[in-house]
Length: 466
Image (cartoon, rainbow, N blue to C red; front, side, top):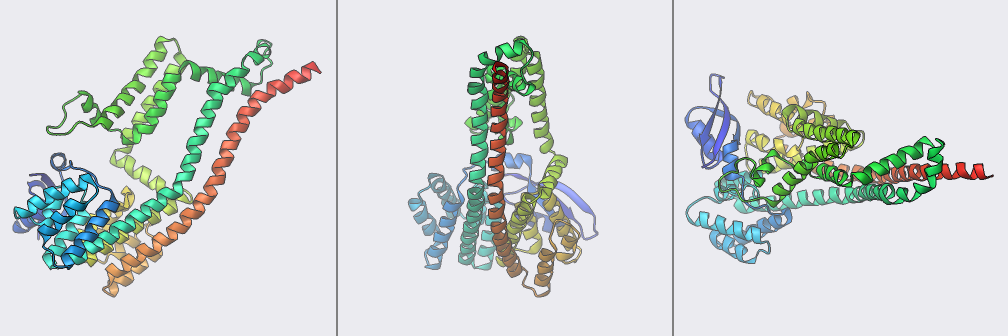
C-alpha cells in the first residue's frame, strides 16, 4: 500500500505531521478522525508515488466519452459491473480498455469504484476519484458521472482553444528560426570569397565581419550547435531520474523502461561533452561559451524546480504584459470550475479547496488558496482571505462573497468559470492577432540585418569601381 504524509491539528490547536500507510487519502482521513485529529493537508509521499504513480495516461476526450456512457448505462438501470464490462469491450482506446478491465476486476472483488479508480492516478485524477466517492456515498453516482463528463469536455475544449490559438505563432517562431539558420549556414558562406579582398584591406564592414564569423563558427561546430538546440528543446521535460534509464543510478523496482527518459539523458550527456570536444579542437572561445550556456541552462532548470524558483517564475508569468492577464484568468477559471463542480457534487469545501488548489498550475495562486483554506478552518469566509491577495480580481472576490452569503457558492463559482473562459477567449484571440504581425516584423527585421550585412560590401565595391 502507498504511504501518505499528512499535516493535522488536534482539538487543542496543536499541529502534528507524520506518515500513514493506506489505500487512499480517504482512508487516511478516517484514521486521523479515529485519533481525534483534523487533517489540514494530505498528499502521497515520494515512496507512495513510486508505488502508485505508474499506469497509463488516457486522453481527456476518451475519458469524457467513458464517463458519459457509464452515466447513461447506470441511469438506464444496468448494474455497475455489467456497465464496466460493456464499456470495456466497446472503448476504442486500448489503454482505457486495460484500465477498465483492472477496475472491473477490483470492483468484482468488493472494492468501491472510487478506490479502484484511485489505483490509476494517471487516468483518474484526485478530482474524479473524490467526486465518484461522493456520488457513491450520496446515492447520486449517475449525476456525478455526468458532471465529470461535462467538466472534462469543457476542459478539453478550453485546452484545444488555447493550443489552436498559439499554433500559428509557434509555427512562425519555428519557421523563422529555421530560415535564419539556413541563411547563416548555407547562404552566407557563398559570399565569403567575394569579400576576401575587402577583408585583407580591412575595409569589410563590422556587421558583415560579425555575420561571417558567426557563420564560420556554426559551420565548424555544427554538432555542438545542434546539441545545444536539442538540449533547449528537451530541458523542460528533463529530470535527473532520466539518467537511471542508462544505468547511471538504481532504477525503481518494477518500473518500466522509459525510452523518452533514455533519449533525454543521452541529449544532456552529448551536450555536456561538447565543450570538451571543442576545447580539444582548440576552439577555446566556443568551448567556454558553450560550457557557460550548458551550465546556465542546467542551473536554471534545477533552480526552477525549487520552491523559490517556482514561486519567482510563476509570479513573473502573472506580471507579463497582456499575456499575464490571460494566464491569470485561465488559472482562476480552472480553479473556480473545479471547486464549483466539487461543491455541487457534495464534497466539503475544505476537501474541495485542497483538491482544487493545484488546478491553477501556478504556485503563487496555490499558496494563496492554501492560506485561504487555513483561514476557513478558523470559521472565516472564503472571500476574506482571497481579497487580501492582489492576484484575485475584485469582481472575482465580490462574486464569491455573494455566493457565500446566498448559500449558492457552487453555482456562483461555475458562473465565474464560464464568464472568465469567455472573457479569456476574447483576450486570447486579440493577443494572438497582435502577436502574429509582431513576429512577422521580428522575422523581417532579422532577415533585413542579414541581407544588409551582405549588401554593404557590395555597395562599397561598386563605389570603388566607379
